[in-house]
Amino acid sequence: MLPAGVIADHGRHPGFRTGPAACYILAAMKSSQITIPQPDDWHVHLRDDAMLSTVVPDTARHFARAIVMPNLKPAITHSAAAAEYRARILAALPRGSTFEPLMVCYLTDHTDATDLSAGAAQGIFTAAKLYPAGATTNSAAGVTDVTKLDNVFEAMSVSQVPLLVHGEVVDDDIDVFDREAVFIERILAPLRARHPQLRIVLEHITTAEAVAYVAAADPDLLAATITPHHLSVNRNAMFQGGLRPHMYCLPIVKRERHRRALESAACSGDSHYFLGTDSAPHPRADKESACGCAGIYNSPTALATYLEVFERANALDNFSAFAAENGARFYRLPLNETLVTYTRSQTPLETAPVSESGVVIFQPPFALHWQELKRDV
Ligand SMILES: [Zn+2]
Image (cartoon, rainbow, N blue to C red; front, side, top):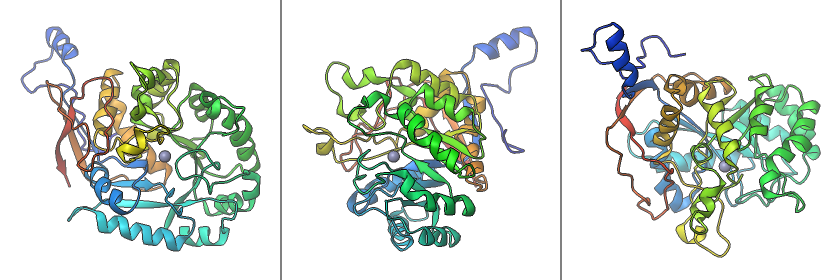
């Protein structure tokens, strides 16, 4: 649903008259413009220090707010550290930016439930993040056994602080492509049974199993973010003509049938699913290495990629729900008042292959045509 006054102008042209011939022409035209509330990014890695100052403008340029992941070294495990990190993000913003970072507590085996609840009450923490120990970048301090945190989850249920989940088991005997489905069965389902009022976001889902599991839940209790890369590539992309380190992320991209399930979920406009880029920059040398880091940097191309995916699925009418409405509703935040109009160019956009600081930027396997035309504040 679009707010009153928002125009979803899908290819209509003021010169057209009604009638069968005009209808035929309209149907044949490509959509050209869409106006929606400014999108938010409900899952992003902004890093720290020099990397923070180079990547934060890319997120702030496109998104009004973002859920900022806390997997720094050391991780953001306390409200005081989160407040300091937020100040560093704000200091790194371009002049005049109104971008709002929303901070997350990194859960460990020793999380202080009192500090977490107090931080949430003070508006420092918007959510808390569960990284199974060893699951991804800087997750060594993550949780070794979720049952150790039952008191924390109980406090989060009471204070209604959402739990954000990196949903993978990391046991050696589980195939890397099965980690998410096994996590749902072994960890997430029992966790939800123990804490039925805990509000959870299953982050960056990658499988048909995750889509189905989330769809069956109350959307106020369980939702999921979906990345532009998981919507636009399958696992072949990692091996096309050689090993492609810039297509490597965790959870790893899966088979085409899973990509299609994600596309159907995102493009449905269903309130369970919303935008989260999981943009995760690494220095190029750390990706192009004998043991390359997991993570895809997509902030500069994310919105154009999402728009292309929705257009190709003939689902632009649902783009506002996915990009600008469902996430805000889950987090119980107001929709952004700024309206952004995106336009489709006839010719493919030219996008930079690397950022100014040399981080390789995600390019989907199709041309991009959508870009911002204007904003109405
Ligand atoms: Zn992430």
